[in-house]
Image (cartoon, rainbow, N blue to C red; front, side):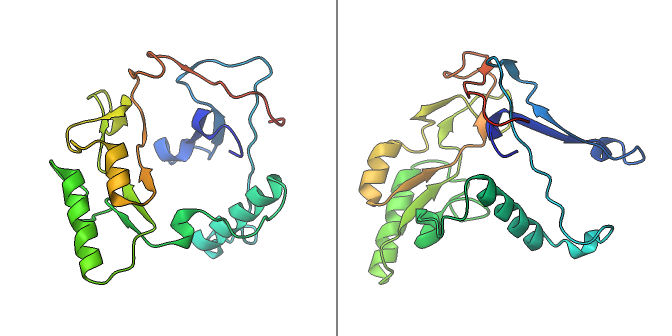
Amino acid sequence: PLDHFHDTSVANTTADAPHERALWVPGAAATLRELPAAWSHTFAIVHVGARGAVAAASPTRVMVAWGRVLRQWAGGDKGKTTDVTLTTVGYQTDNGAYYVDCPDNCDQALLDVRTALLRAGAPPLGYWSVQNAWWIYDSSAPWCASDLSRTNGRFPMGMSKLAAALNAPMQYYMPYLCASNVYTNGTRTSNSSSSSSS
């Protein structure tokens, strides 16, 4: 998809039925209960490599080609992105990092990491990425978030105070909202206005 990323669902029929004809089925997510009049979304199909040469399409080549198409669609290559994660060194608590499953007092653990790094002569970090289920969630789906305004007890200081104490921008990861959450009251509605044709 080139727009309405959170409202999109894409299925590949070969995943469930490998002997069937391959189909790529994009569309609106089934969890949407309503859409505004004239709603549309746009998809791009990016072909990489010669016909039949799937092996030549490495993941890197595919992502470079996709990025080129996305930049062109958005109005051209605007040069280097000034995103803090692309221009500075940060600390992340996911993908096997030591504090990915921090059980409690995680805010103090991260403050202790910052102190140890500074004492060791490391430069100040440009950002902190907290990705270890800091949000309130229920058991309706794995890792879903039901309330992002409160923490689940792992960060007793609270996320705003932790950000101030770490003295660097924070990235708060959460994969998706639970079906029952404080934001949609059990319904999902696309508030996005119509864009280009689909």
